[in-house]
Image (tube, rainbow, N blue to C red; front, side, top):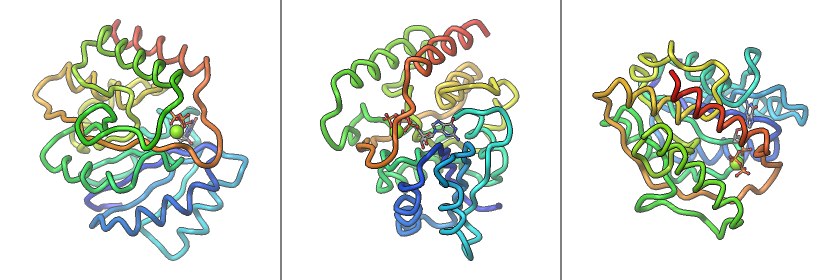
Length: 232
Ligand SMILES: Nc1nc2c(ncn2[C@@H]2O[C@H](COP(=O)(O)OP(=O)(O)OP(=O)(O)O)[C@@H](O)[C@H]2O)c(=O)[nH]1
Ligand SMILES: [Mg+2]
């Protein structure tokens, strides 16, 4: 998979979102772009839908996460398999707007980490978000800044691009069970210093099909991750 950019899409029960997402990415006009879907054994047939769509398209692949289960390990697995210069991650639920993809990837030509951000100029929400979710998101971001000292507006983002060289430099230090992998990458690159990090405005959409995986357990995992990272 030697190409300029690989877009890694972690999935858990996203069958109905996959064909619209893959076809939107294909028509977005991103040169030399490959897509790698890393599925968590979804019982709803997500992987089958991806493979059916990808038939005869060598630039699209769907694999199963057969290692440590979870979102973070799936992304790390996808990034580790891709040998493109730029590694990009986006959700499989259509909440990440494909029209932001080209700009995000282009910004990674001159930066080591580009964070798709809802809270910088050009970023925002496609429609009014549930106020409880806004409070959870803002609090989680504030905690990341407080505990880890990261100076970015949207440290929780799952829409980002990282240069492979930078990813490989911190790969041995990543917690294989890691949860908010972008935040972990950001923290490790910041600790090392000398990496070019920027935020790029993205529009965050509403989930159309399938269910959110955000739960009290996920929030607790996040708090544990902040403490574990800080202790390292
Ligand atoms: N491979 C893998 N993918 C996952 C796992 N959990 C969630 N995902 C995928 O990761 C992406 C983000 O998960 P979401 O549940 O949408 O999380 P979110 O966007 O923070 O929450 P919502 O705004 O409520 O949708 C989606 O593409 C999910 O299908 C997992 O354990 N393994
Ligand atoms: Mg989502």
